[in-house]
Image (cartoon, rainbow, N blue to C red):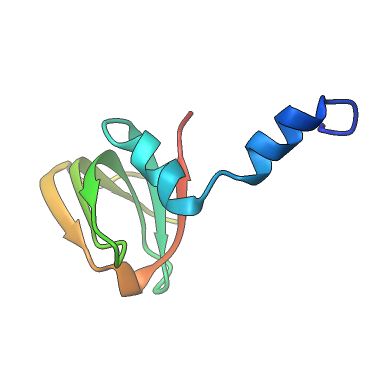
Length: 89
């Protein structure tokens, strides 16, 4: 999405979105999480705290070749291990 020709209020609205707000909007949706140890998980975000510790459900680990592990019912990820979070919007 290009903001070059967008109205000023649109540019301000996009610029004022905080990272935790994006996460808050992602609760109940699928997210992709990359950890600092290069493991990758995809699952439904149930919740998170101020330290970005996250609770996910229906989680699968995605390997580097694209194959997925057996689903994990619920998982708690330590926020210090999270390198990137990508919500599916």
